[in-house]
Length: 205
Length: 245
Image (cartoon, rainbow over all chains, first blue to last red; front, side):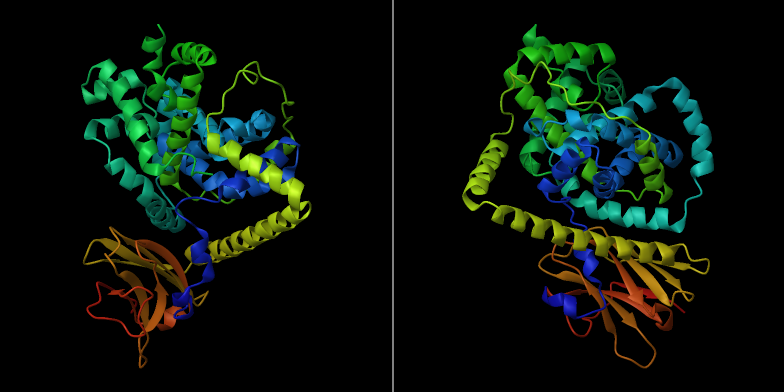
């Protein structure tokens, strides 16, 4: 681009596209991983770890536990790689499903809740890098999803985000939103359908 | 029964069901082609919500994970019962796959050359990004790093981390929104010199991270709104001006 020449802005800045990496790569790597290729796994790690860690951290809200669960989830990706079926969806969707379920399992366990309270205190001392870089990168990635989330009705958005980002079960979401169960189930479904139409399903890697 | 259980599709995709409901729903899925298609699509959608959560993992995590997989046995490939009855949840994928096969037959090894080239280019970009990330991390974790923040008058903030030890700084812009039909441009101002561009954002871009070499010599980091592709000199007023001295 022309503006690249103007300043000192490094070329890398285009390398963090807000829509994620191109679709083929994660699934190509996953196929190699399924054959036991550890180097391919390293590349896959570089590709998805920030989002896997970010997602799990978002749900658990505790960096120390997020780290542990991220490790569990990524090891599960390694273990299960041969079961990934590209005909059923994208590789990243498969990976994030594993990661999300792990995070939700953890957040729902009673024991974790107490541990989390204790650890959250310890972990509140963030390095400047964590605090600042996270915020900026987060912002960058957020735009597209945020725009689509803003498109939902208030109830759809709350139902989807309380479940996905905070790991609440739908009965708990119904309670939090003071809304009947069937309504919450419906809002989750039609919220997702609206998001799908906004984002264009299958664009994600 | 089918309709009743199927209303759980959204909650199922969002992992908002309990184990019993999950098992029940998955049993239902095995009998319902249309439902599998819907679950496939909505799972892709839900996964996109993870785009919203980018966060830098601690650097040691990579090594921990790689060590762990070195000790972990992989499951063998098995044919699941559902494979045979599976429908195509995403027709375009099959079309793309079919096209690739046709191309492979027609063009032979040329396909691999193109593929290889593409992978190499992506690797180059990824490596550059990693190198840059290492530089950013080094500056930010430097013992003498000084952080300065300044609100953007139109919403958001500019954060500058500078290190004399590295003779460099990291400028992070996080604006609430991108300007319409215009772009953000960052500037460094040095004593006795004209403002120098430190980076021009794309249209629609509201956040950026820029490494500026020699930053500790500058007195200000400024932010302006400029026509697309940026300007040679800043268009005043500055909407943020971070004083470094």
